[in-house]
Amino acid sequence: MSPIARLLVWVHLAVRTGCLPIHGKNLLKHFPKGVTFGTITSPGRDKLSFGLMLPHLIRGSSSLGRKRFEEILIIQNGDRAGGSAYVAQVAKGIAGTLIPLDFSKLTDSEFVENWFHDERRVQTATLKQFWAHHTKKEEFQDQHTLAMLTFLERCQSTYCAWSDSDVFVHRSASGNGWIDQAVEIMEANTMTYWVTMPRLEETANATGSCKSEQTRKFNSKYFVVHKNRFMQQFPVKVQCAPECGSFEEMIMDHNEWNHWWHEQGGNEENLKEKDYTEGYGMTYACDRQGAWAVRPPENAQVFEEALTECATLNAGQPKKKYGRSAKAGVDLNAGLEQFLKLIGSHGNDKFEFDMDHDRLADSGIGWTCQRLGDGEATEEVEAHKLPFQKPESEPSTQADQVPQAPNADNNMSNPSSEVNNKDL
Image (cartoon, rainbow, N blue to C red):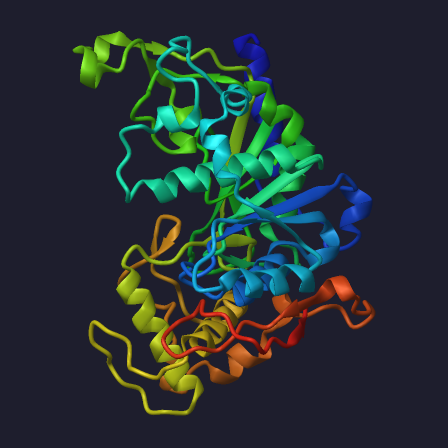
């Protein structure tokens, strides 16, 4: 593509997506092409209750909720402590398809050739060989990549939307979610292959405005791809084995090594540009009244203490400052439920979330339940449940019923034999 043509495309895209207008109603009329939603769960290891987080993701990602998605694919990564039975209940309640992660694909040479190709085939014929030097700690990253590839392989819709189950989503003032917005961006421009990282960017006077930009970056935690366009990049040529990194590192670096320089004495002069197609991705940031998604803070202890505080305040107990460990006997599921209300009401309150790029900041400023203990926002949080409500004219169906997450002391993912239905 000539430089002039590239400029025209960029100007056209900037005009179309600068304010990112979203049609408040009739999304299927404006954008009828299908979307499949995917996520991953690790029964017995999930940090947050899957039974709470999955309906939150479905409600908060599109104004149509479950009706927006042709399929919901849930990749199950193993089973611990009998957690698979609970996950099966959650999947059934939301009319989702449960797909056990097939670890045999790690050593399947035919599977890897659909995604990555290394001309040194004797050395790297399988995913396991790409990651041969990974530590035990890095194995979960490998499993996440395998889960995402499994989802992309199974997704048959025009658009494939993925979110990890620990992402918090917020719908815009018009009621639309970040997946709605991503589809509109890609419908507006055929050169956009994916949309990722719909960030929250706080401003003094929130109006629902958003700013977008092109990117070669790809975040595997949450994304929407136009499958046919996205798959034009594959198989990607790589020469990073046996220390290949995450999925995004393998496909989105602008350079590749001629040799694995750690072992073979290479240096930066050995870098060469990858041969990319003309497509690119988009990322955007909205103020609090827009459609966005945030990830938990980097410090897991900070988040656990915040949920403990939410649970305690929700139970009417006096506000306390907890130390490094959560208070024994506190139901963190109750804390998570209260926290999700805060996410849903943000944009209608007077607080600003302190952010660390796409994560909530470790400082806890603005996003914790501490403000509820001061009596400043309790009524406001309860009043603004629009992102989590179904329109009154829309009857509930079996597919709109979601099992409620179980309660467990100090364990948000512990399964329970008693599961109740809850409207999307």
